[in-house]
Length: 320
Image 1 (tube, rainbow, N blue to C red):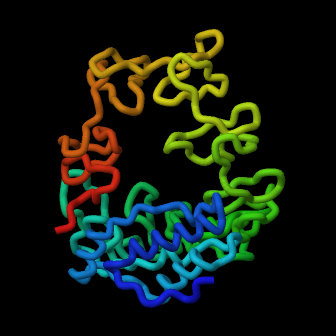
Image 2 (image 1 turned 60 degrees about the vertical axis):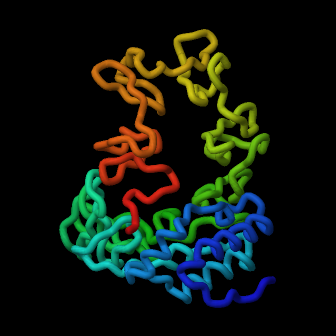
């Protein structure tokens, strides 16, 4: 055991979190809590200096302790509460973390910085496509409704975070090793042979593709009861899925075929593959970071901020 971690400053949070995640991964192979998470340290430090973001000491310590020393079957739930925004509604936001708990960073792909807007009040009218309810509420039948706690019925409202609906009642999601079937497993785990287990790596047993972890960043497939990488162009696609290709089901056997190249005609239905989009019946490459965009779909990374495509590891808006 490593003992309780000492106080961590916001400008050292990403390093402390990464070290704790590595410790968890070493102790609990396959545990999703040990997977590295995106953490933009320079931006966090700058927001801290501006008073826009704060580190909640108790939650940060609980998070690091759970990752470093906690049981593998216990999720590190405090990590999600370690950072707290300090900017009230009407103030600017770049990362989306800066807004106070009663506000959110409204999406606007053309403007930087964006603006913190008020969340819908509990019990007030809401729209699933509009401003969100508070974190512990959900939009149900047009009203912000409190999420149901453990032991409460889940027919009128969704369960609180970390809970699932089991036989009509909210109950904790299955941790690693817990019995499953009727009860769902926690995120990052799958129900395999009646118990919640980590997602499988290449070659691991599986009953469905959802039992497998990403392989080299790509979605895997369960083939012959084992986790396997998706087939590429020219290979059969018996599971109707391909890597960087489409599955031509009209072929015998179904075969992976390369997507149209930029400049080629779109496939029926305006399909061009993940790296291009269909414009005037022609496939056009999605923009690289720095390219002009008006929507996330314009960018190869799927991230458009301030009218420019952003890298996957960069803020949607620069933190000045």
